[in-house]
Image (cartoon, rainbow, N blue to C red; front, side):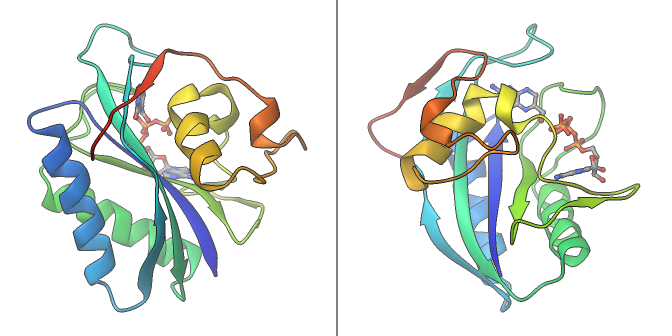
Length: 157
Ligand SMILES: Nc1ncnc2c1ncn2[C@@H]1O[C@H](COP(=O)(O)OP(=O)(O)OP(=O)(O)O)[C@@H](O)[C@H]1O
Ligand SMILES: Nc1nc2c(c(=O)[nH]1)N=C(CO)CN2
């Protein structure tokens, strides 16, 4: 199945955490990273009183079921020292599932597609780069929508 993940970090060595999260996801036999966007430095969305983030979007191929993929993302977050303290607060690494095989899913643990993705320029900008034909939950193409928040693409990862 094809899936899209959003990864972000705003504590410590942000580049290291992005790199490590990709490596740890890819170490799983049932996950293959197909595309990885460039790195975007982004102003915090939601709770603005925190450091700027570095964000990327990944396209992956996986045979894991949606909840197993969520488990893996949360294990990788944990292994990189992620602590859940405040909603939308600072974190070493955050991994969100944006889309899984265009499935619509809603239970206590997982909502797909990610309900806030369309409002977030930190998701849309890297997604536009690797998947310009991506159709958002509203039915619009990602290139036709601009989310909230300032983002800058960095030269290197
Ligand atoms: N599409 C999804 N991707 C990741 N987590 C999700 C998703 N849908 C629901 N969740 C649930 O959201 C819970 C909170 O996740 P997390 O702490 O990463 O939220 P957040 O990143 O602060 O905020 P946001 O959900 O707005 O990105 C997780 O425990 C997870 O079960
Ligand atoms: N710029 C930016 N802001 C955020 C981010 C993020 O990854 N980047 N993640 C959040 C929780 O999902 C809340 N706010």
